[in-house]
Image 1: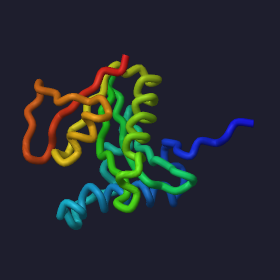
Image 2: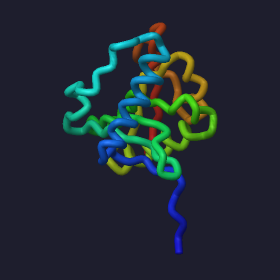
Image 3: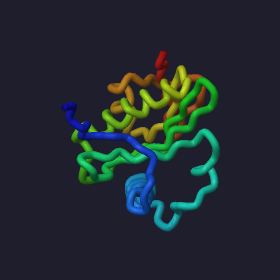
Image 4: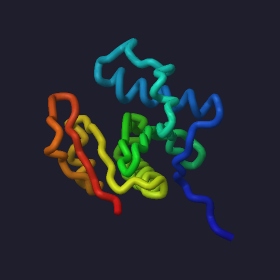
Length: 148
């Protein structure tokens, strides 16, 4: 008998999974950065073709979120976040790794992400490099990775 993996990355299906998806994004990516009352759960681009909102479940509990947009042979990792109380435990690395597998099986050959400057070293440890073809600013650093 094979053992069930402890971490899975999946599309939110239940109301509870969607609540967790939005709660993690709102807290980590908006409120923690002083952007109160800005987060919109009903942004239309969340539901566009080729956009895949996902939640990282660890032992049945939502611990992280990502949206993977597939545009031909390019995957874009958007709004990557791990719950505050679950950071620095390997969940971010696990989530990026599983999302990379998803992107590869979806036909992508490269990944791009617009990374908070505080997370650049983490992304570099995960195999990403600064994308010098796009300008960086004080909010985002463009990073990319080949996956073929």
